[in-house]
Length: 152
Image 1 (cartoon, rainbow, N blue to C red):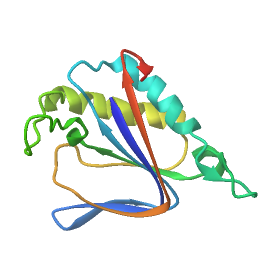
Image 2 (image 1 turned 90 degrees about the horizontal axis):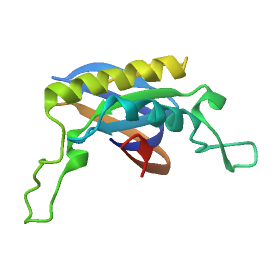
Image 3 (image 1 turned 60 degrees about the vertical axis):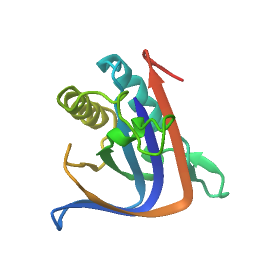
Image 4 (image 1 turned 135 degrees about the horizontal axis):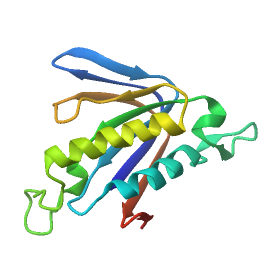
């Protein structure tokens, strides 16, 4: 599983020109699942996500996590995190998980986030074309890769 985490001031997503969800200060998480991913990697990833100390404290040092600031989460599925461009300019997605299986893992990821984080969580529409608007804060972008149950 690959996660791209962006610290935001505000974010929203729309489907077919209809606003489906928005958050204020918090994190946008783009989640992609690879062919060999299993449910066992989800809980360690969520634990890491909610404990990432990437928000500024009173001394403007990144020392607070999302719970400390009562931030909000937006989780968006993104299979393109598994793009392979080694052979030409058109990416292939052979390492991405099949959509039906990935949707189950994405939904499980969102459910586990709800279990670990009591704040507002908004999830994107799996498999739909979305327009995602992000107002970055920093900008701060963190990449996390998980495989075989551990962060790699």
